[in-house]
Length: 77
Image (cartoon, rainbow, N blue to C red; front, top):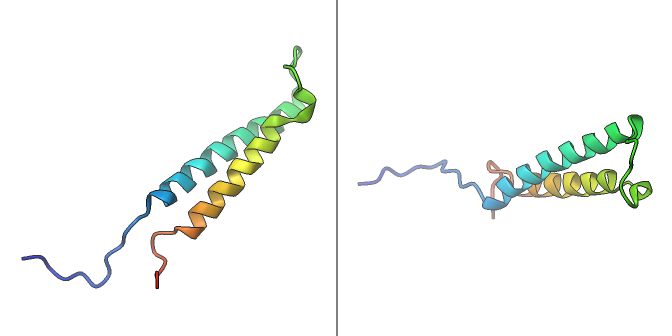
């Protein structure tokens, strides 16, 4: 027999993806900020577009969106 749990928590796979995107976004954004203060002596092609800053910010934003949207303790209707 299975006990009846009144407070069972289900964790969505999207929450884990959100956490992963948040971590990657924070790391990439941090490296992009680091690159602004410590320039590379031989910068790669199109470095002036600042891809690490843009992609880090996009990943961080999407990660926070998914993490907060699919938070495990949130009640679903």
